[in-house]
Length: 473
Image 1 (spheres, rainbow, N blue to C red):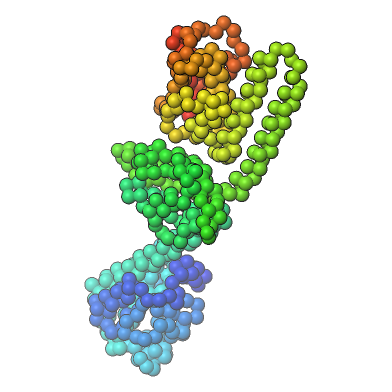
Image 2 (tube, one colour):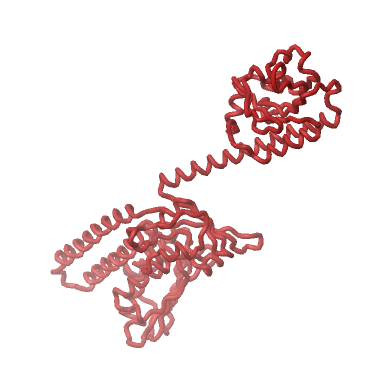
């Protein structure tokens, strides 16, 4: 069913965005073929507007448009079929047309309607001769003209699709700029990145469509070098999916903080092929969070001072010292969180902070993959590690000069597995009393999962398990 209304036609023409545009080879080729097949000196892709017909493509004439009163094409807009007028001088619709009565004195017309997928006729693909043609077109010419009209509409649809895509890309770019978010897609095999303009702006790079991954990587501050992905971690899929890092200050760019979120795409064999995601400027958020963190640390210091003053007269100093140590452990966890506000903290960094404050870092072997903990898990893990280390100082491996500990973690399916193995200390035995520290250790990682403690004579061996989702949530 064809919609012949003027409003529908004008809306359709507007959707194609084609009126008054420059010549395009795809349309020019069609009119050249139509003129050759139909053996006419003139062929036009004519788009019929309200007050004029405009020629998107033409051969054999210099005019680019005519007033609607001179349009022969306008007479074929409602039929949905070929319009053939063998002699324009005798047809009542055209015999007084000035293009017929005056120069260029056209005499023959044949046109195939240009119909949108929605059934709206927007113009005609026509051929024109300066001599009458009583026989009109033969069957082969008619079929060819109709087929070429469909090809015109294929070109029009392609043009509309590209225009819509361009509009979508433009809207996406505006949204990126408004939100301060840039996007990227990285081919893991070539290290070539396809990047958005906002991605370039955030890294202080000239706007480009592609760049080598090494270019933005080199801009990350050296103190955060371990947070960058690299060829190996991208290829094996072990690169952290969410990281926050600082870019180095440059002469033309102040230091800024970015959050990078990414996912991996795999082929049918499971190999990583692409890494894609977004980067966002979080400088203002970091500054605010660091100020909040600074005030919280001051509060912790105040709590420690109040506790020391309030408990100074307690005769049994052991519980007081334990309480103070736990406040110190909370402070260490807090420091690690401040460094990575909004994304928790790396497990390795938390362990190094807790053991470093106790002077035990050099006596502990830390082995495991890069893994970011969530904020709650950071606090819980730091307290667990503090209890294990202080118990080892009192009763286990750290109570002798030769003692040492292996703290190793791994990912087993969807679980984090953390092993604490003591060696070189005195012979140990199952504790007979279960205090707060023992209960905290028994709660395991983030208060979830399982905790298996084996008090071997050679030293404590403990294995903790917890869902990765709980540790990173």
